[in-house]
Image 1 (spheres, rainbow, N blue to C red):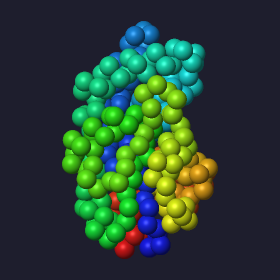
Image 2: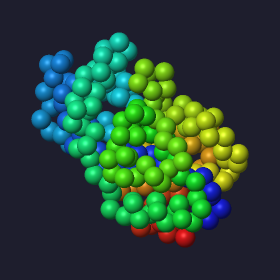
Image 3: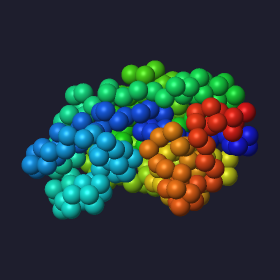
Length: 216
């Protein structure tokens, strides 16, 4: 990884642990449809994928219902959920080290861009990134591939072989490969080793410390 100059990071499950905020936001949305879920752990699979897809696939919502449910989700998330979050230990130090070493850091997340920026500002992490891009609020850009394509178009990263995506779910791997770059899968987030292997992750690391070693 010493040859990689451009590092694209996922947000949820890679830089921060959003478990409480996302699952409580899901609870809030589902109540509008008479679905009561008291076990937050059962809602953890919603961390990572585009929310519209999750509502459709898990609860068999129509496209229209799924988009409406996302709006209910955002009611809670915009007020409380965004800050019910924590930075993984070692992440600030890793980002500082990478920036000082001359790497160019970016965020590519399925979370809407305004929320991603707000979270990274809150945790004093925005200063490490050249650009932060996520999904659009109007659902026109939701999938990880679309987010990465948009980020690449905005930044003009010249050499994809010198870029790598870092994330915890199969969506990060698929997005990276679809735009022509490698992907590092991290196991401290919400994707299993089996998921990342099946998706074709180029490298898999168990911890923030192990991720740091890759770039030393």
